[in-house]
Amino acid sequence: MGKLATLNGILKDEASQMKLNVVHLCSSVNAKTIDLALLKATSHTSHNPPSDKYVTFLQSTIDTCYGPDTVDAILHRLRVTTDVCVAAKCLILLHKMVKSESGYNGEDSLRNNINHLTLIYTQGGSNLKLNDLNVNSSRFTRELTPWVQWYKQYLDCYLSIAEVLGITPNIKEKNEDKRLETQRVSSYTMDCILKQIDFLVELFEHISDRPKAPQSKLNKIVIEMTELMVQDYFSAIRLMRIRFEELNVRVAKPNELVPVLEKLENCKEGLSEFSWRSKYLIADFWCLVSKLKDM
Image (cartoon, rainbow, N blue to C red; front, top):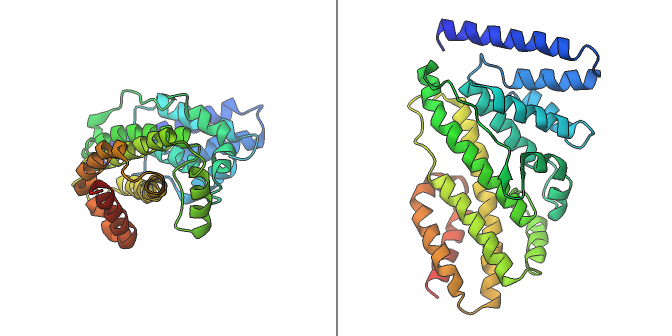
């Protein structure tokens, strides 16, 4: 980051701090603390993702009366900022806010988060809005910009899945998680399962179409985006596998799956980069895809 850009960022952060102090002269201590944590998490002067300290604090507000205000504040900061780094950090914060930290609870995991989820995405409409970003302020921002634009579209897809499936795609490799989800899916109609699979495949396509990795290997913001995306990818595999297995039990030859399986095959190469992270999960999934395709 150049000296001029650094100075500009410091001045913007200080101005935001002064504005916050004025706005909260008559506000509660909790409201001011939340806004201050948001400013610290999304500062102009750091090329790092939001600090775990501030992320954890902001996440802790979700199940309180301040939860909707926290999400609304992040969305507002995303809409008004022209700084690429700040926009990236806001998107990362929102992604972490909607991912259940308490574990998978089936439909209850979405029901418990309904207030803040509907602030971001509801009935097919997204409130994730990017301002006209100052792309050419540095080499770093030029490298980061396509990732921010892609990540915004990726989160739109992620949140649409949460709406269609009734859960956030955050299932872990636990027997109880799989049992709950399998039981839930077994009650669905064929059309419902196929619709859900279509949305999950869209997530695979978005991941496969991600931008090229920045030339700067130390771009920690992109590394954080990628890490969250990979977690979602593994969860989506588990969710899709449960649905494939349910269809395999019900139908001898599910012809409706052929176009979906072809789309998946087209994504396979773009997803191969992450195979080493969970070899058995990935191998078993693609074996199932091949089996269904050859039926």
